[in-house]
Image: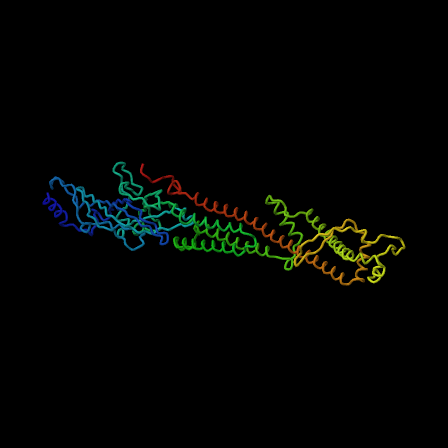
Length: 530
């Protein structure tokens, strides 16, 4: 049997020339059938826009010069010869990226008795694949492997898709052997059509005129990016909203939190830029999301600075207008469903209390004078003592009109209380009834009779005025702090809404970016086995 096969090979290759096309007439064409079997989608490098695949390229043609009669060679129906001993159609991958047009291993060629040639070499191809990054990482890609003859034109060979022996129809898809195929962890194959195309821009004499296209429409599995990039980025970005829970005066701590989050977002942006191609044609979806959250964080940093400016204001640097107070302490709390921090009635009552406080302070000072005057009342029983103190002109039983009145100190009933004040204590008296005109006359007489008492009264008035001013300053500073808190609350809810709506809207765009039902929009055909 081995001798018969050797004799068959020797007979057929005796005058065989592998450089001549296997046709009987120069105008005849060699029909070459091409089929692609995918065993592994190794990777898709987005940065380099390179698709790496492990395939078997099946090529069939007929060479009448190598046909034989099986009865003459003891029924031998098939022989195997090295690829270098027979004519080959020189079909190569046109869109390779590494300059390697040939296959990985040059297997033997199978020759059948009717002259049919069958060559099935394995290959690892690195082909170009234009990456569309608009919806990254919720994207899908359309990668193509383009095959054509490197030396023969369409007038010399006719490239067609392989014919299915069962259905006798072209195999218009990339074949996948379930037993040999290895699933890719990042990409899922959705469509795998195969077509023969002719380019009308070229003539049949050009090598570019006819080509066979094998498309791989693949969709990314985004779980890796959701777990390792999107979810951590979203969680870190949401922390910036917690800055609003810090007090309005804690501007430094707020800025520290916000800027730390901003730096973390910048790290994620750098990671994404290392993954996607350096193109200006479009911005990836996750890049848009990072830019969005960075913009929100920048707005929050700006807001923290503004709130800190409001919270640290004082009457000596800023004047609070009635409009600002009305908007931030009345309207904004009502809008947020809170009780107004101040209203017109409270403000008017506050003014009335302030006026009453001023009047009572004046009365307290007058009653202090009365108390001092009551201390030497034993001396007032003697006329000489009264004259010496100069009280006869002001305190007597006769008024300027000649009518008899009671002494002033008998009209006033005093209740003594002791109230602590900064630096000491002050005596405050409660007045049940007082004659204002009599008190004024008493004050004038007291100023002439006892200058030391007048100085004490003036000092008490100064203390009261300083205390009132400090209370007013503290009240206005507290109002500025409340305004800062209201701005914080408004911006907190605005940031929550902006962050939530923006996040949902951006990722919904990726959710709706699904692979179409048909690989080519102009025809309703799936290009899959029946």
